[in-house]
Image (cartoon, rainbow, N blue to C red; front, side, top):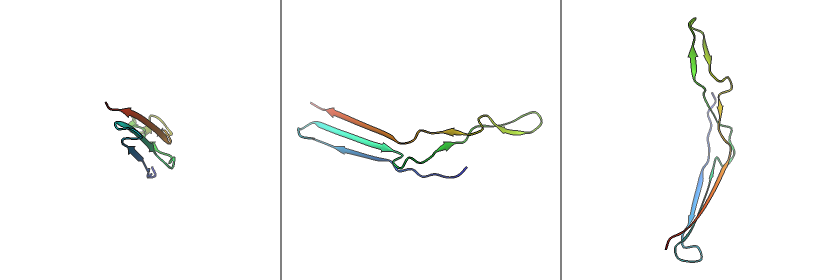
Length: 72
C-alpha cells in the first residue's frame, strides 16, 4: 500500500464576546487525502493467500466539527 499524509487543524476562542463563552472548531484531513486501511489477509488450506476485502477499507474524507459552550 502507498503511504499517505493528512493535515488536521483545531482552534479555540475563549471568552467570545462574553466571559465563559467558548467556540471550538476543527478540520480532520484538511486536503481530503485518499486513505485506506489494509484488509485482513487469510491463508486457506492450500496455502493460498487472499484478502477478505479486495479493495481494502476506505476511510472518510474531510471532516469538520464545531462546538460552542458556555460556562457559568
